[in-house]
Image (tube, rainbow, N blue to C red):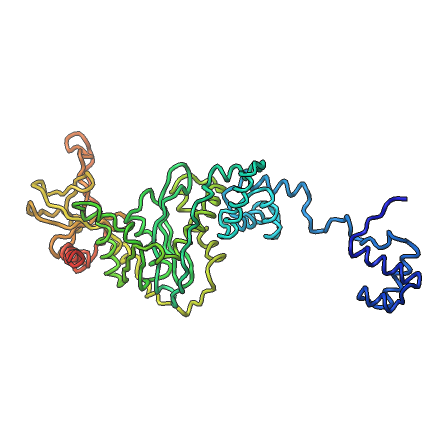
Length: 459
């Protein structure tokens, strides 16, 4: 006869029913001790007489719950995380398992499985990280063998490293009331670090503009402003980090093209957008936390998509940002919006421009980006007095125009060599093709208007 081991509550039940069956105590007393009905006591007495001690073993003992992960599936999940999704946080990994591997698992079960193997989520909260670090330090002190995941974590992390914290602030009331802008230098894709320029609506938490570039440049901020103007309209205010956006301050004699503050600030001025700056990162906690989230999720998504260059990364952002906003932004009430009316594509093109000063040489030309250009009006060459100061406008689409006084001319590149020889070629040389449109002479991008705004900024 095999030995039967009962657990504490099962042993108590067995002893009580045994006494009731031998008439040591009444069935009423037994029901009181076991906190059950008298009918249940009679059923237990019957079980005692027919099955003995074995009848009091719980029927589910030794049986795995139907929701238990199989050993094979557990090993597969751990292998996937270690080999493919190692940089994903646990919540993101859960989404990726459902989306790409067709594996549905609860977050708690996934968290327990990965934690038991020594993995620590890159986005775990402060208390979890602190306890994990303390546990690892204690293991190291006691010379307890670490798992492979724990060894990798210790090798790549300072266990005493301070935990980053950004204080929370109330959101803006209306969409478009405050747009936080910044850029993050990180190894987003490939083997070269790049800058992700980002704009986040403070009220909804939605990403309203995103663009990759090799440097933090005016071009990057113009691209996200272009996205905002096209998809949303004109916002009321930009809040940005002065230390990064206005790098021209570190230059002794910045050129107009590199004067990011005046270029971007003047564009905002023409659109009626207030430009507020701060040197305190905590004042822009919304976008700082957004960068932490994207550094955890976007890098993994780019890697899974096989993207290694910023051109393809910018194309990927279009679809990814829509999915990201649907998942993480707060519920949006579109009636509470202060975005101004969307403007025409033509006005956007000439407003998001880079303006610079040039002097006309004795050859009726100006030099711009190591190339020579001449002035044209409706396809006809215009002669300009030497040493005349002009304003060169590079529109958002790359079109080049020149402003002299209150007049605006088209710029055409002067060829180094003639494309056609009058002596040896039979067909006649072609004249520069008229572009068909230029801004009005009263357009705000005249050099006088630009320098007037620039002098106000420096005053």
